[in-house]
Length: 72
Picture (cartoon, rainbow, N blue to C red):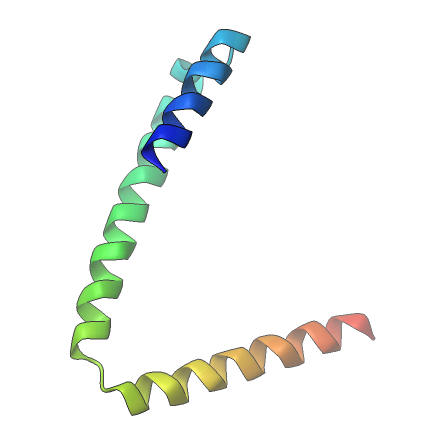
């Protein structure tokens, strides 16, 4: 992954992508990704599997119903 992202940075930089203009947003996205991974790891370590499975099924059902509702 690191090599792929590094190659993308080189290619976009060569093509003239303005990193300085988007720097604050890129930094915020990286920080939120790290924070989300940290919180998610800690949460899953302390959450019983049965509770996770139940919550996951409920969330997936709600998302599915919402998507079906959008069709009509």
